[in-house]
Length: 103
Image (cartoon, rainbow, N blue to C red; front, side, top):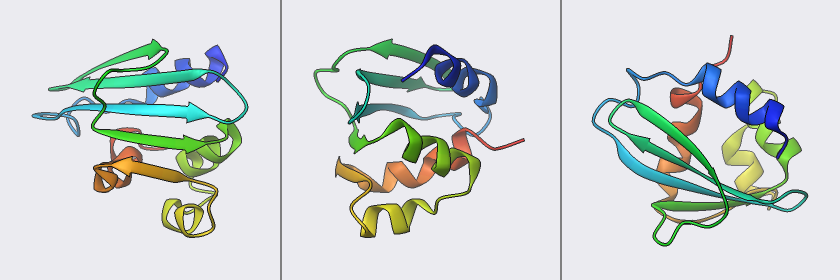
């Protein structure tokens, strides 16, 4: 995952949407390293590597993530077609577009 993508996530983060949330999103990128996002009551931390106990783990390419974040790819159809694999609390994955609204 490029630093530009990480910066974009940080900029797009909506603290109000994350109010009261305490969750860890683990990303396993098929074309980049592993990163995880720690959402803690309106704050966002982005870290490289593996978290011991993520709320949800997502496996996908960085391109697929970009598409989902931009709205060009429907997250549910990415899941159905195998572009996105999720384990753990998969319902949390549906919160990503709310936490990182576009434009």
